[in-house]
Image (cartoon, rainbow, N blue to C red; front, side):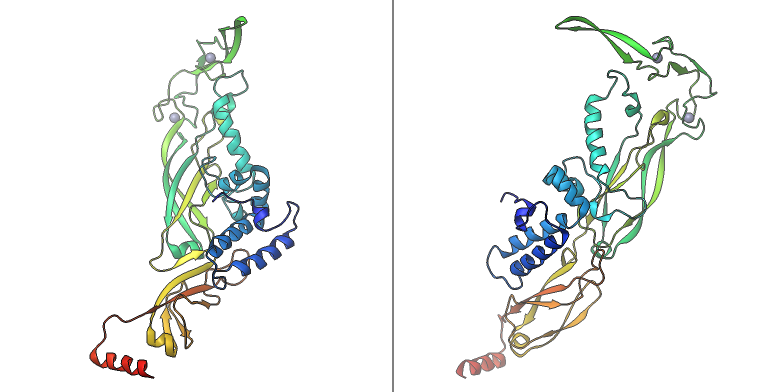
Length: 366
Ligand SMILES: [Zn+2]
Ligand SMILES: [Zn+2]
């Protein structure tokens, strides 16, 4: 199914206020909640409404959506479009930048890489930017729900301490032989209009006009060494699976004073053996025996807050969904928890003892 415009999903115009968005979401979510709406497409519509709300209720994500459409929201959720990006919902905690600048920066570096190189001068600074790094980080189901601090260890290019990043053994420099110290080289190119002179940045000295006299022994003149980095990251409560967090400046060190690259960490949430999560609500399928379904009773069910007893009313039907209020995960930027929805599956016995069989036969007679 093709994705519908988020505003269309919520039946609103692009200028809708936050209140209108919230109102429309609430009434539509109520209307399509699988708990009460038994139509076949109710769940799909419910998810569609939730997704639209998730984006439009968040100022930054909404701005990205307005500007870039679905591609903008993909960037926020770590989609392939721009090679991952920050996640708009979670800015404001230390060490993590997720403003729109992220998307723009990515566009910049995306185009920068195609138009960069030793172009018509003025581009050399970009070449010194350290490379971005990325890796996936697996976390437990409960860790995603309650949030956690984790120390990640990875290798990155760091500044060589021996030469302070200069790459030089003794700090002495000589004039670049390629450009004779000018920092620029003139190249002649054949074009349709005839020969054309193009002035490029000198590739040997990168435009500085100087070369290192003797290379630093520690880094071989690169000014860079590979180093292990231990870095503590805060994973916010309620983080969805597949979100990419961006940590500015935690990628590779930039040469010759260039800025460091960024680090992208994509969060992989391990599935739980029985619980499933949608936003801050938790879903569980639970089998009960037919006698408890008919007569009612109490059963024990797992929640993210530990096992709890749940009351089963007499006459509970199979596939009926019961709600454990407040037993979901913590709400993001709000007080309280989501709920847990327990879908009851009534188990019909397949093997009966002769005594049981008699009792069921008696029931048939009544
Ligand atoms: Zn060095
Ligand atoms: Zn040179």
